[in-house]
Image (tube, rainbow, N blue to C red; front, side, top):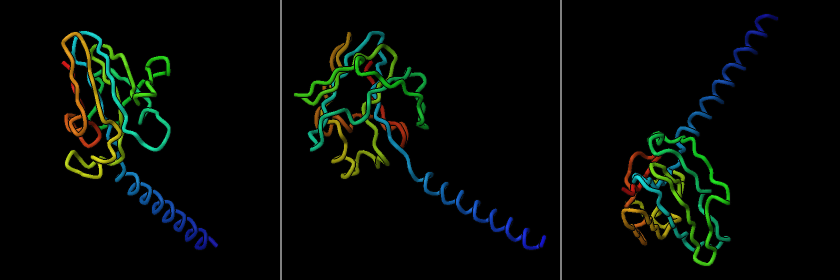
Length: 165
């Protein structure tokens, strides 16, 4: 009887170990890449980003969210403060999201599953933003088309940043 219980316990341990290993393998290969605009100036800035025309109803690719720039981590898993609908504007007609970004804050404007880098043609096609304009005390940056994607700096596979100084 005790031999039978021992085999049963051993089988359960093997089954649980196998499930844990499979879960680890499936989740370790999965990551998201955040695209973040950083306002590194000493003044607030207005961030406008135009979303590509997809067949679905207009909306931001991710709900805009902010974090203090110094708290950004190259490892991902940021503690984003998701903005409420009264903290950003949607211009439906122009498919544009407008956010006032305080000094030394970062704004997540997009997140892509397993972004392969600026050279990946599939990611170029799937990148949801087609235009970014940053306006502040020190001037304006306007990026369109591929430049709106490739101007982001590769910090890590989990984080690409565009800095306004």
